[in-house]
Length: 414
Image 1 (tube, one colour):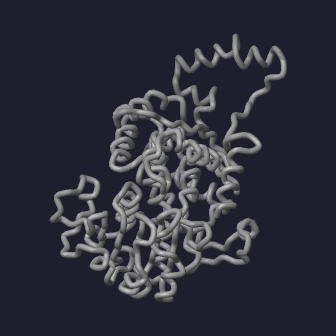
Image 2 (cartoon, rainbow, N blue to C red):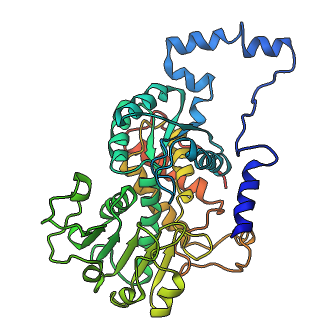
Image 3 (tube, rainbow, N blue to C red):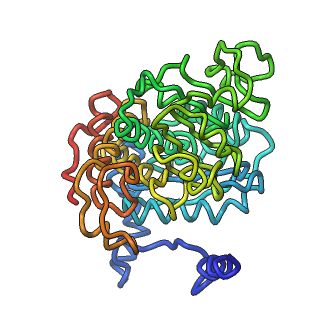
């Protein structure tokens, strides 16, 4: 682990600090180039944009840009360490946007005194970009921030910790339940965790067919039930009219455990209480709610997923957010709505059922074959089909739901 820590530090420091840089896309080799790039030539697109603001998409890079914005209040599994400490994560997000979807992303870390101060700052700079990816903002403020910015901005605003996690979780869950021979509308869900990701995941699963009455969500005080008066409006959506109070109570006979909480909070004994052929997504990072070895040691009929890359079925946001933004930007969507998110869910789920390209196997050391089943319910991040399939599904959904300014979908090539 010490070696890995040093490798990570060296990766970020050498040969130059950081992970991203700016590239020039037009020639600047002689005086004519400079005259076109800046004064006096730059005045021409300025006039055009002043007369017609949408021409910014013609004459600037606005249409292929995303701002990755954080206040550092919920950095990965590290907590509230402040805006500057979040910068390596935001740079990493920008790297993923560029590598997987050729989107130019800029990381922005915001200091503010109030939630409204953050909202005002982001709104003030929003016109610079084609989309906004909010990141690592704690609940419940993140709900208020995203809602306000969606209303204020004319470009897509997407809190990936909520919706990216939810989309990938739902895709994997749909496939896992199918393999286990269970219907989502009949499945009993236990969700350990009641923060932004947990609420978004369960909201998405409800949109995909899960029933509210079959969901038991737990926070630090236990099951969120209708008798509690200490829960906010977001948790209240999942208050169950039940006499279950503890994880032991809720897990007994459950079909699904979804963990978005902390390390080692699910015991082997609790796994043993679950219904036949259960699904366990233990997504706490870097250490999951239960180690897969422990869960498989208790029973052999589970499908297990985690947030880690060193186990099968990694629930990883990179499976969706670059491609969702690619599709949204390409049809100049004004927002990323439910129709677009659900389209992404089904596109991801469908890819996992198809034959895996040889290039994917070659990218993962030690993996000689992959096929739809208990240890492969989600595609791998290096799968080249993710970009064309998800971007196209999202773009079509944007057009069909009436939020796209362009009604022609690009011909995405693998």
